[in-house]
Length: 516
Image 1 (cartoon, helix red, strand yellow):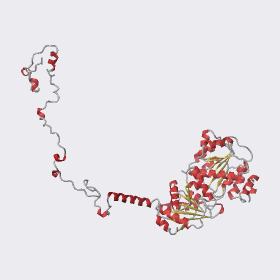
Image 2 (image 1 turned 45 degrees about the horizontal axis):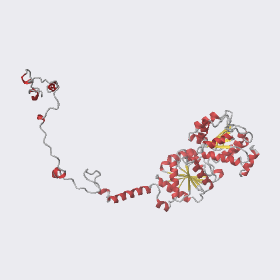
Image 3 (image 1 turned 60 degrees about the vertical axis):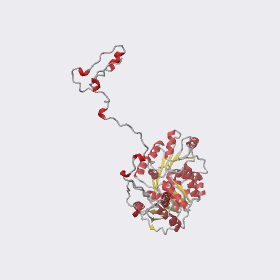
Image 4 (image 1 turned 30 degrees about the vertical axis):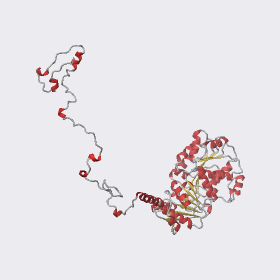
């Protein structure tokens, strides 16, 4: 069967012929007629099977009639990543060159002002990531009430990235009568629930067994040690041994590992680019364009590049880290061997990866052959590695230099003696022991002479600091008060008065006369 038998318009057929395609893939052959018949479609197909063109080509045919209104797109395509969204836009630019269609891209990393300006002019095809799309709808600059067709691409990847709640919100914002196309590589229970909720009697098209790898890809695994530098040595040996390597994608599980591995390969003379989610959008786009053009033969990437990216000429895929989820392995391997080409996929397996490899083999239904990485080159052995060993040697050299500056030589462990030394002894040099207290010089010889003070009188002879509570007030104050009036009271002798006065001090028993 050819594209002429699928019901596409003459403009679309001309664009397809200009691209060099004559025979549709199975997913295109089965899906395009149902899309043109305005049926809901549930497509289950692996990456590299041409499913993007399965909805782009019929959409171009259907959009030849009608006109878009401001802020009300006619069709909406949701993609999980910015790279996939940009790739779909390239397909519309490629096959829709002869049509006057407005295609807008709503992704992160681009200013809201530029995107809002395109929406104001009217959009026939809106390609967006869920987060940025909802941002525009919440701002009031986008209305989804005019959407005639909704396409959800890479739905299982949406699930992995946590976009299913956003997808459900979008499905409630578009009209109930819209046509929905739903594409996924696997069918986990959550994806099945979404399809049952938002698709109306869909036409199910399954062109390959879920979670299967292409037969054109030669898969293998290579055992290595548990240390990071051993994995890097094994990877370099595999790259050098691959005589048929044209270009390669190296997958890591973590973004941080992507940057470290790319830097390590660059240090060893490889032309390498990096691609991960924390990079700026301009840097991500530049790295992907250089890889597609052949300017960078090796691309180190996280799983952001594992889903849907159309890079036809990838000859090798290396799993530097074995993926934790078996489905990710299928998508990574799908980057090579596309469109019937031959490809090679090699996984570097550490001892801790055996459980993950077993889960992958169970999912794909076959055993991954084990091969030998071959001898590690002398350059790798001499350079050891750039992140682990040099760091330890530089740390040791800095310690030895510091000991030289202090005049110390670190003795062997057997000659050190006990770890805890007496408090009065130093480490590294022997300090003289402190002499006994009796043999020390007298205080007068060590310190400056102090002022000699007179001895204080005994406590018994001191005057009391305060009077007893039951003592009568001193009579001396009264005469002073009377003296101010010019008359002095007669002297009073308490010793001659009756009563026990033994509790009183002696000076209170003596007669007191007022001073005149």
